[in-house]
Length: 482
Ligand code: NAD
Image (tube, rainbow, N blue to C red; front, side, top):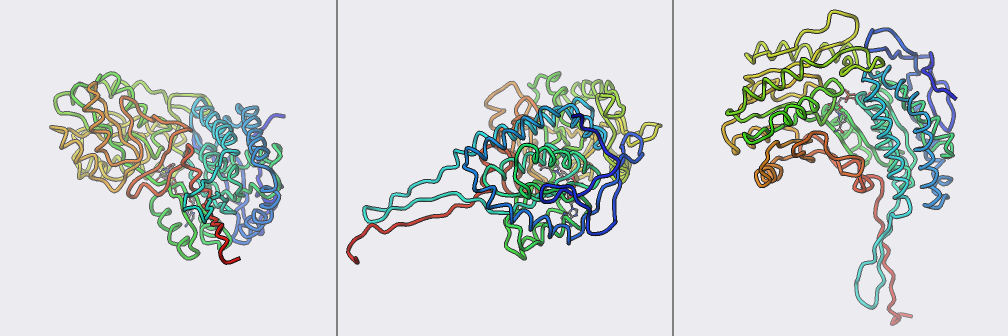
């Protein structure tokens, strides 16, 4: 069976594609041309109610499977996603704009999330707690119930898989709300979940904009929320979750520092920083947004970086260039405004900054030098292929600039001196630090932020903490009151 983008999409609730409660639909467009790809249903809060109810009612069937069986079914999802990897990658590339090769890598990540968590399903053990001879005390780990998951548009399928796979193996049911500019891959994925034997109602997808997102995050029958997106929306989600005392995992933005020390291999550092900021057209929360470069190697590093930046090919994602377009028109405007801001603030535009003279939302790799730490381009998340290069004089200054931000998602160090590199890694205030690479870590390693970059960790075994709660059972062995 070939999987292709359709002209029209419905909501996926209780194991089937269903009409939304109103006729309203939205359009998703090809970011390389601006032309519509498909219409999809705009869910209302009534549709979110239906999806949450279906999820609630599915729990007994899902939890009736033994952990081994749940793991097998979840593994079957991995197999089906792998079987359809080329088609899913093409749909993702078309809808999101990313190069086909990167979309394919995202699909491979989705496969890995399902394989990885499938293997954990039968290892979610509790503990016994020593409390003396008259008590037997144990803990068991139980699912929350219904998990509401709101996803962004930069990694639509892989972020969906990142949240859904651990939620499922832990015995939860999920309602996913994809971003309105990239709804397609999640809907195709839901169909594969059904084919894999996931019971009806365990995986639901409600498409639309802020309305279904807000309805999900304020729903009093949702037991746990996983949100990935911007800080302002994360704040709104957390506020509404507070009304129902619902736990939240928040994966928010970043303004991540890459520190280049004077002893770094500059070719290697330039390669990784370019990869870190230009991959996915910079639309990555963990991107290398700020290069902090020692003043003694500043010019040499910038030369290497600019060479790399100018070598990128840009084209429609499906034509598999080095870089695709930005995802949608509003975001394109925001990123172009930041380029203007950088120029107005007095930074030097070394390369890029001019959109391509063609349809679609193409901005070439853009590098600003002579950036001061207090400039907006050095402080705010741009979420585009725009790098700020900031000089520093010594290690103390590097750390002080690196940590002078409201974010704390990732950071990086480039140095040949292991002691220096590890000291810096220790001192950077972030959830992940990369040494002599960027985008280190993988499916198996915990990922998340400090400060405004979020709450909780995704990926790895640690992610399961978001989807399981601990029950303590205390048993009285004392026979004296018998
Ligand atoms: P966004 O906050 O605008 O939207 C995220 C999701 O929230 C979308 O599905 C959106 O429809 C939904 N939403 C909008 N209003 C809502 C509301 N009031 N209540 C509930 N949901 C609502 O973010 P975005 O622009 O799609 O994504 C970009 C942001 O995501 C960047 O800041 C980026 O750093 C962040 N991000 C973080 C990670 C991470 O793992 N830390 C990963 C990817 C993206």
